Image (tube, rainbow, N blue to C red; front, side, top):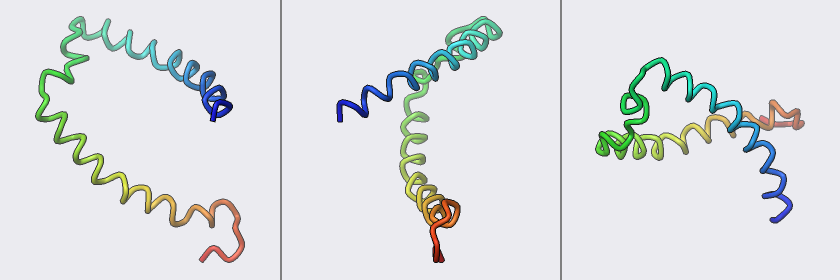
Length: 78
């Protein structure tokens, strides 16, 4: 388990470095941080979005996982 966490440090750092410039550009272009980072301004909308995503995640996972063996080249995947 420790090896898995150690292997994730570099990808997480690279992803963070790739995303930060876009966050800065969005904040600079809108000139209003509340317009960009207003998740807490509408908590009801946030809760509804999270519930919707939690309900849709299993369906999406099933759609992706079902044909995956065929894409990976497993014989007799049907």
